[in-house]
Length: 287
View 1 (cartoon, rainbow, N blue to C red):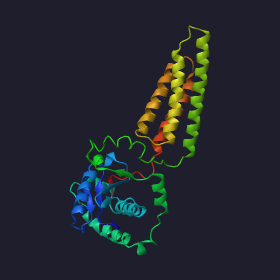
View 2: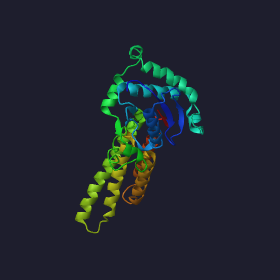
View 3: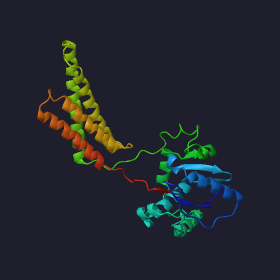
View 4: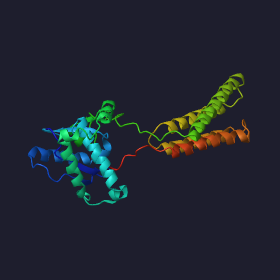
C-alpha cells in the first residue's frame, strides 16, 4: 500500500494510546493491522526503537525513508506540543486526541509527494537507516513471552542505538587523565608487589590484589565517563567505593596524602560521570 493510512501515538511505559488518526478506512485488513498495533504497543519497552511489522497488505511503520520521516516529524511535534508531565499524568486513553489535527495535516503532506519534496530533508534519515536498519518484527515476536520469542531474543542484542553523551568538558578530561594516572600508579605498584612476593615468601599477596583492583576501578570509571551504559551512575559509585576500600587496605604502604589523592580523583570521576548526561533523552511515548 502506498501512502499513510493510520497513525497512533502511545505511551511506551504501559502502551496507553494518547492520540490516533480518526479518519481511517474501515477495511478488514486494516482493522486486523490495528489489532496487531495494539498488541505491539503493550510490548514496546522490549523492542528496538525502530521496527517494522508486516500485516497482510499493510505495514506498521512502513519500512521506507519517507515513512520514518513522517513518524519522526510527528514525534517531534508531539514533544513540542505537550509537556512530558502531562503525558506522564494521563490516565484515560486518547487524552490528547486533539493532536489528530496535526496527524491529519502531516499525513496529507506525506501523501502528496509533490508538495512534500521541498519541505523535508531525507538525507539524515537515510543515513540513520543505513547505519541502523529497522528490525523486522514477526507475529512470534508479538506473542512471545514478555515481547520476546525464541527467534528474536538473540537478535535484539545490540540493535538498540548507542546513547550519545553530552560533550566533554575540560574538567572532565582532566579528571579522566588523572584517573588513568592513578590506574597506572596502581599497576606499577602491583607489579613491584609481585616481585617482592617472589623474592620474599613472607610478603602478603593480598596487597597485589588490592593494587590491581584499584587499577581496574580507575579504568572502569574512565569507561563509564566516556560511554553510556545502564546504571552508569551506580556503577561509578561502586567503583569509587572499591577505590576507597583498596586504599584503606593499602594504608601501610601509602601515606595519607597519596590516599587522599587517589580517593579525590575517584570522587571527581564519579561526579563528572553523574554530570555528563545522555543527549536527547527519549520521551516516554512513541508513534
